Image 1 (cartoon, one colour):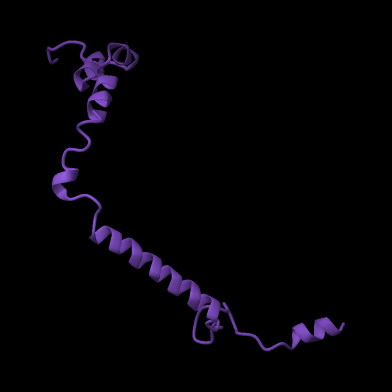
Image 2 (tube, one colour):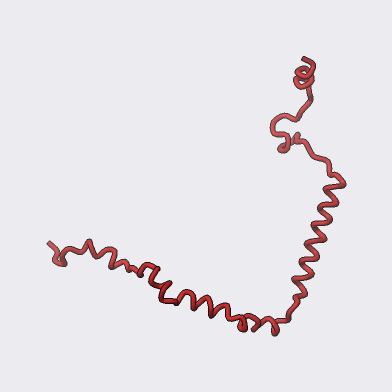
Length: 106
């Protein structure tokens, strides 16, 4: 009975509690400030690493050629065994060829 009375006469915000003119504003805690500060410091470290790359443009221009990754990928798709598994290319003419009965117009 006492809990019902407390909940019945409790002063709350009308409507949605986090929207509108009379919304409930959550106070900013020290823990939230520390978390935000750490996040900003982490982003600044990432931006520093991105501004000053490990390799120069000349060094990074040909480093993947020695690994031959692209050649291996192309060889994988041009393999005859792989090409046999794929369906052949179909044109629109081949699809609509069944509709062509005769050429003469009546």
